[in-house]
Structure formats: C-alpha cells, structure tokens
Length: 447
Image (cartoon, rainbow, N blue to C red; front, top):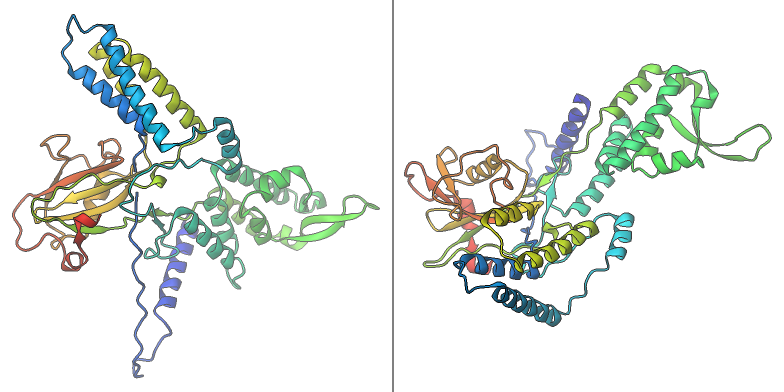
C-alpha cells in the first residue's frame, strides 16, 4: 500500500535531515560542518559440511575414481571405508565435541526457535549484517540488533503527536513476528474490528476482556497487537464482566470512536494489507590487493551462515548412516548420480570474491536467493567506469561466462562461497576500481 511506502519515505527524509544538523540562513556565516556518518564495520560469513561429511565424500571420490577391477572385491571396499571411519572417530575424539542431544534441541527449538550450530572456521569476516532504509543504510547490524533497533524506532513513533499511529503499529506487527503469530493476530484483531464496523451500537463488541485466553494467545503475544488496538481507539479500563461482578481489565473503545466507521474501515484495510519494513543484507564490501604469484583461496566462513534446526541435525545423521551403507556396496554411475541429487545442501548466504584483471579482489556478502544481476550491480558500483561492459566466469565450472542474470546464486552453484573472475569485454584505460576503493584496499594475506 502507498500509505506504508509514504511513511517509510517520510521517516527516511526526517532521519537524513536530523543527521545533517540544524538549518542555517543562506546569508549567515558558520564554521560548522555536517556530521559525517562513518561506514559500517566490515564483517561477513559459511561452510555447512561437517568434518565427517568431508571425510566420507573424500572416500567416495577415491573409490569412484579407481577403475573397477575383478580383484577389487567387497572386502577391499570395506577396508577403505573402515579406515576412513576410524580416522574420523579419532579426529572427533581429539576435538572432544559432544554429540547434540536431539531431544533437548527439539524442546529448545520449540521454545526459542532455530538452533544455531557452531562450525570451527577462521572468520574472514565477523558475520552477516543487515541494513534497512528506515534506520539508514549506513548502519549495518546483526539481525537481532537490527530487529531491536527497528522495534525501538517504531515504538517511539507510536507516541508522536499528530502522527497516524496505526501505520507504525501495523509495521511492528508485520516486521517483528513470525508468520503464524502474525496471521493469528491479524485474523483475531480483524474480527474485533469487523464486529464493531457491522454493529457499532452493540456494547459487547466494543470491549475485549484482557484475561480472555484467545486474546492473550493470539493478540497479546504478538508484538504490535496491543499497540494496534490502542491506535484504533481501544483504552484499558476496569469494568465488571456482569453487573455485580468484581471489576477486571478490559480494552474498551468508546461509542464515539466506534461510530467513526470510516476510520475503522481504513485501519482494518491497513491491517489486512500490511507489510514489513524491508531489510537487506549489508554487502560488507572489502577490497583486497593481490601480491605477485599470490593465490586467491576460497574464503572460510563464520557460524551464522547456517541455521540448523534439531530436525535438520537428525536428517544429517541419517544421511551419514546411509552414506556409510552406500560405501560398503558397489554402486553404478546412475546410482551415484541419484545419491548426489538426494544429497543437496541449502545455504542462506554466500560470500563472493571477484578477481579483477589488475590484481584487486572485490568481496561481498549476498543472499543465496538473490539473482545474479545483484552481483553485477554490486561490481558496477565499484568500477572506475561504471558503464564498462564485463563478463564473469566461475573457473571451477569452466570457461563459459555466467550469463543468466535471473538465476539465483544458489542455482548457479555459487554458495556457500565462490571466487569469480572478471574479464573486460573491451579493454579499458586506467585501474578497474574507483580510486576511493583502491585506497581502502588491504593485502589479501590478512584475510
């Protein structure tokens, strides 16, 4: 809806002018300068395959590379598999990593959501960061930090005089709740308003008992639910349920507010057609300078590139067991290809490094479901000539350029991390990158 876009645009402009400081007359002299907002700290993160997976896959590759021989029987395959498993057991014992308690993980997941599984990797970047236009794109934060900052900002808008508080309440409801919680709240609140719109003179529809189980579970538990009702005119009051009963807490809307059907219809429309505040991944740009004869390695990634639930961990263990069984049997090429299709990993983010012809590397973080065009746009923004035409290659996949800009990065096999090579379609004069990015370059060896 345009009302939400206009609200976000207005708050973005207000935030911009607050940062630039107080206004000045054109004929007034002043030595003050606008404040400069520093860029966000660098950070980023990915590898989801545990050590046991790598060992098992390595064993498979060695087995399948070998030419099948009549003398290479079941016994030889079992010996190789057992050796790999023994090496993996020793490695796990050295690391002394306890196996996850799946029952406990399931209980914890139901209580607080997805379980975060740690992976031991050197962090080339600190983690995955996010930004949103409402708070300023120069402020990059982790997702929990951004959600908290967003909640604080929208909550503050509810107290602004002269503002339509329905809009920030709807944004709170849609931005800070998971889909099942949000849908339950929207459905229940919608019924409250619909009943009042259809029966504005009926007292029983103009109050909500706060101790009501449905209200507590479906509305009060959702962030923004109570705030939305307050924005539409509901106020807390002590009233008896029936005449002679002890007074208790109700949310009550006055006869006057209930009679303003136009305002209630508008609020109901915004509630049902609401939207969340758009957030996006901070690219966390880093520019590296590559020394002579220095090799670009695949970046290693931090833990928060992966959110594994208890169910996913159980599935991983089942996959490992099935993989060991497959290692102990001779399999045809068709069977191996089918196994490979069944064993697919999904990632949330990917870290890309783009090697430029003049020994610079541009690094950025992307969502795996972003289109490939987002990578090209990111690169163009940093070039000395943003109109220059270029092609991107994945050296692991072959010599053909990547041309389908609509495909996701995951579909192109660029997750959880990849190194791309950039070639100019036509030679350019001067450096590849703008001077400001060249000045910020650091040696690749420090990554």
